Length: 239
View 1 (tube, rainbow, N blue to C red):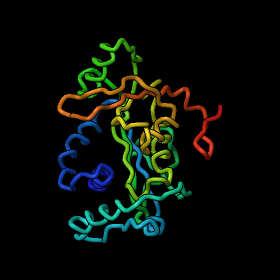
View 2: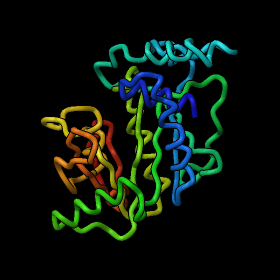
View 3: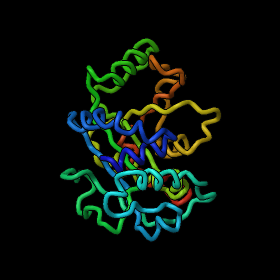
View 4: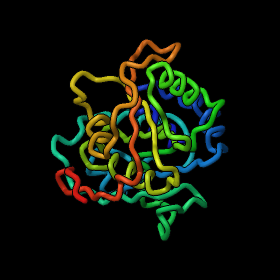
């Protein structure tokens, strides 16, 4: 959990002190119906080549040493996509769509995380999105999943880690549709938008406001029967 939260704060640009504020929330989510999670690992050798230093052994890895490691990951990402041996591993005991994967070893470094669960009334995010959809006259499927978190260390941007995580997470889902929210970006020009569009996510709501957050969000949806299409190397899709 600590390493996953370190990835989260590094990807979001937050202070490491905020990581444990999210810990109770993530633990709670892990108990919700339909929860599934995947994590991306690369070898320590590949991580070293990308200026992502693995934590030292022992007590130093639990203090400033670990935080320093993830701050270094904020250096400039790769300018062009590069092939990287990324291994995506499901959460312990959850092998839907990822059967046969070995657990991570001490020779691997955690570089990305993704999780979600089945939507249900009473969930803060889903209740607000449902209300917004009703107000806009937009119908939603009866059974859906929410993609709650997807984060990759900034040093690994451009190495298709996010795509590997997203495809693996969607493979764990049994629902027909998956929803997510992402901040609005002019021209949809950031990595997250490009990833979601290539994966077939389409608009549900745009410029949506959650109370307590001044940012505007897009609510996006993909129907999983469309994911039978395969992605080519340039990100296009073919049946």
